Amino acid sequence: MNPLRRLLRYFTRGELLLWGSSVLLISLAFFAFNGGSQLTLVASLIGATALILCAKGNPAGQALIVVFSLLYGVISYGFAYYGEMITYLGMTAPMAMLALVSWLRNPYQGRRSEVRVNRITGRETAFMLLLSAVVTGVFYLILRAFGTANLLPSTLSVTTSLLAVYLTFRRSPYYALAYAANDLVLIVLWVLASMTSTFYLSVAVCFVMFFVNDLYGLASWLRMERRQRDAES
Image 1: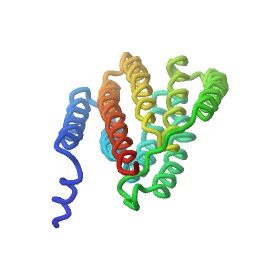
Image 2: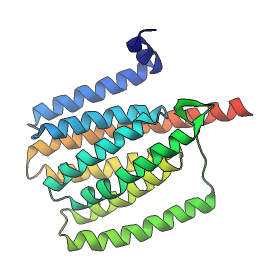
Image 3: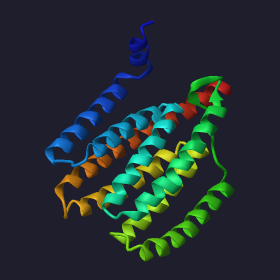
């Protein structure tokens, strides 16, 4: 089969429409708001592609998340969002690499293109929340010392990012819900940034589209979880 046709058959029409709409709107926003460095556009398009692959449970999505995290860290540094820079370079990128290894080691029925969905226990959930509270407190002090812009939402972004990367590593469907919460925080952060320069609105639009993609990712993983459970029952 033609590789392009095989790729198109891998995604549903809805998924292709979601990805295409994300790419189109992100690109239009970049040019409409004079989005500055081409790095912003490249990072946004890589992120949108990563999310649709992650929604399919495909480890390739995690590889792209690593690339996106590195680029986004550079963009965040440019506006003194040191919390975002530290979070994505020091936590999201390394955890995405660990998640990539975890997903590759846990394929569903030997298929490398789909990870086996995992369900975490109540005890592990309590540990995750405690860890998040501790890390949030530490980061608040660090970010305040660095003079981070918009300190409180920047700190909240650390919390939601930690929850997201932890759940991603553990192959939980609710990783997408944590990322959606993080997207909302980031929309606020970049709208605030746009008050000093309108080209940051393109980044805000990017995260609006990421929010839609992450909601789809949650629905997709819950369906995938039911399908895998039914097939093994």
